[in-house]
Amino acid sequence: MITRPGPLAICVAALVAVFLLMPLVAVIPVSFTPNRYLSMPDGEWSWRHYQALIDNPAWAKGLGLSIGIGVVSAVLATSLALAFSLGIWILQPRFTGLLLGIALLPMVAPPVVSALTLYFFLITLSKFNDFIAYDTWAGVALAHSVMIAPYAVVLITVALTQVDRRIDLAARGMGATLGRRIRQIILPSIRFGVLSALLLTFVLSWEEIGVTLFITSVDAVTLPRLMWMGLRDNIDPAIAAISVLLICIVVIVILGKTLWLGSSEAKAK
Image 1 (cartoon, rainbow, N blue to C red):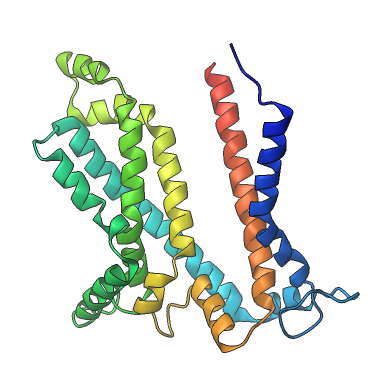
Image 2 (spheres, one colour; image 1 turned 45 degrees about the vertical axis):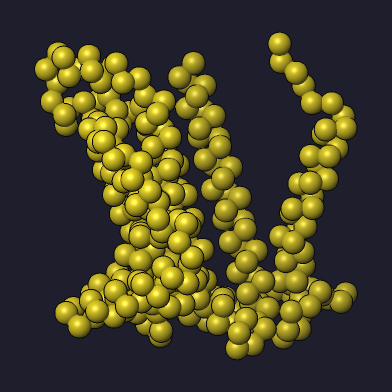
């Protein structure tokens, strides 16, 4: 029997949703202020700060850099997490709990400790190369991958717990190689978990600012760092404009993912 929520529960849920969304909604009118500082528009609305995003090439450069780093970090972190989770699931080593604890360590360690560790690591790499080093996009992508990989491990590990191990054992008994079992049995069964890990790690890399402040200076200026610089040096209303655009992008991505998953489940039925 399916129990539907009552009117009171719906009202409470709506109030909670409005309370959580109010800070985001408040940014929208601020982005249309005609003033040079953050304020609510007083009878006059202006597009000048959205125009500033187009006129200033630093915003476009930071946006492109953040997208590139996010994609590389998400792919690298998800690939490492997938290999680790598959190894744990297939081999079932004796010290599985210890290995999972080590893999999840960046998630529970204080961000400042992780940032300092990655800072000294990239500074050391800078002595041997100029590609994966301090204040380079590759160095930032590597640091982000370290920070976001534990979240991918959690999602993929949870997805693997839903896979019936007897199917894999049956394929193994029929002579299927390990690679074929992974390609044709395991990966199709956890594809939604892997895609969710890719999306989550991209979002986490996109918004990462704590570690980025430690490992960048003037060359690898991501969009969050550029926004932080704008808030620190001068309260630029263009930050409100870029925030509104980012909110719209996130809403579109979430709605698209929801519709895609809904259509996939409908086709599966």
